[in-house]
Length: 139
Image 1 (cartoon, one colour):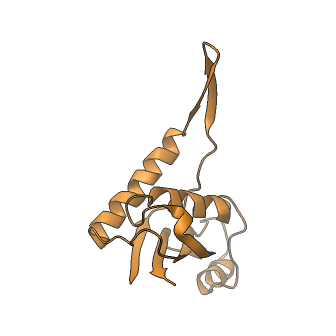
Image 2 (spheres, one colour):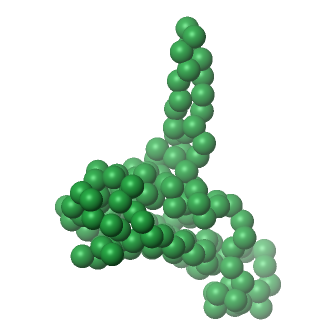
């Protein structure tokens, strides 16, 4: 089985948890921006893929193409090179943080646990239409 869907908007990475201590207990909290983005990923998955879900224990391959907005401030020549993929983003969010937010978001939604993911690829590009393209398939 193969599942593919898109997440509109600028790619975002998984934010670092915020820690606080209350009465001697350490609490970790996911940043609000990350929670909102994880919910967007889940919503887009459900709208585009319905209730499809991989069985527990199945080995999975997760592929992500992250498309960043082309900056308005660059020359026409540079914009053209960005659109062709000759110039690719070397800016944040980092590829590993994008992978983490997608994998965590889809726990219990697309698969039982992200530990099932045994092969990944994430690629960063520029586009006029910032988005994530996500595909998951059995190995």
